[in-house]
Length: 202
Image (cartoon, rainbow, N blue to C red):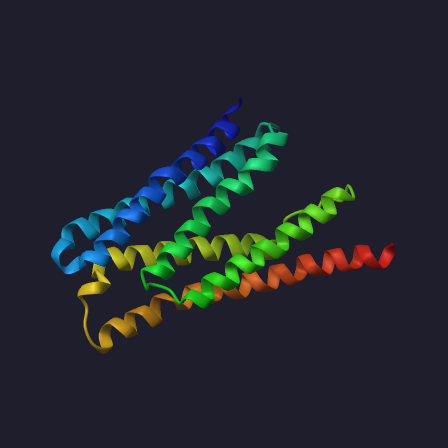
């Protein structure tokens, strides 16, 4: 197994501790995080660290595979799976914890499901849909938005903030998330255009 594939495998393994940390933080919220403030901050910090590690390995495995011409079927199949495990789990968790609106996460997930369905359909017809600049912008802005939310969540410990200030902070940190959502929906539309063009040629 080459290095890019090992990094992809590592990212898939990181999903396990991420899920454990998310569950533990959920337990703290149920018990009243005010009584476990330090533990809550530590758990959120670890979630942030795992997410950062996953995103760094995502960049590295793609870069190394292209640079060293080590693109493999394993990487093509499991790289996007690893990405979705990490990103989707993090998004759903942030919505459950109340850091981002649930409807934003639903739209992100719905878009990915539709695009994945399009990719499968195109692959069945031996057509390779290459990643567009819009898809790359979606990934970049989504990653930055999630990091911002996690950093602010660690810094301010939302569950202990009362009044209008907490809502102001929540609205502010979700502005980058809305930007990412725009690129997500628009890139999904561009993918749809690709398959529509194919259908018209049939």
